[in-house]
Image (cartoon, rainbow, N blue to C red; front, side, top):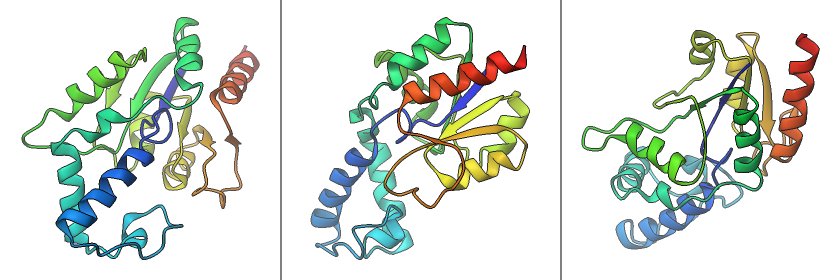
Length: 193
């Protein structure tokens, strides 16, 4: 069975790292424009930033490799290793954008390996993940973003949303932790035989 899985805020606690960097960037580069709505996840709604300022922030974030500060989320490492050791194929599929000056793919793979993740392969630059999941033959897809889950669902692929404060509106299958995800995947796999 092939499992497709997002990285940021799915298996890694990236939001806290981004938030800390965004506050710094806002203070020192944008002269304290501040929050528009601190309850929003999307940076267009969260900060009083223009599209160009948001783009500049994420370029700053990538250039300084700040995502390397993110730590594995909860029990993700343990249960993904368990699935991998049981013969499941693990494919990381991320929106992380390519960069002309940095090899984001190698940096991401090396970061995952250094933090202990075992996986089959990793793909970057996927703004929508449904087609990639279809092309890779993914059986189950896991993400924290509702838009990605819905896109993958459109291809008839089973999905599990990782529960978080910013995705409560989603009414489909969700899990609070990777133990729940592990149990769901094992149940689905056993039902196939």
